[in-house]
Length: 94
Image (cartoon, rainbow, N blue to C red; front, side, top):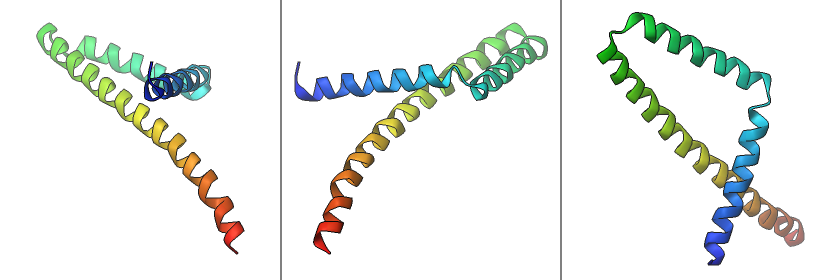
């Protein structure tokens, strides 16, 4: 395993831990309730073929959202590293 693969795996584990912590929050419970309500409304409003289409759309949105979540999380970690490197340098240069 290369160093980049090890770093990717480490970032994945950090993200998984953060998601697990989020899922224990009240905010997650509220979001989950909204999703369940939306699902129930789709069941009652759409015909079966429309429901299938809507479910595929929602799945795609969730998938893209997950990619964005992962990117932003990883970028946040990289930004923290940059901050840790640059801030001490600014104090040393004064």
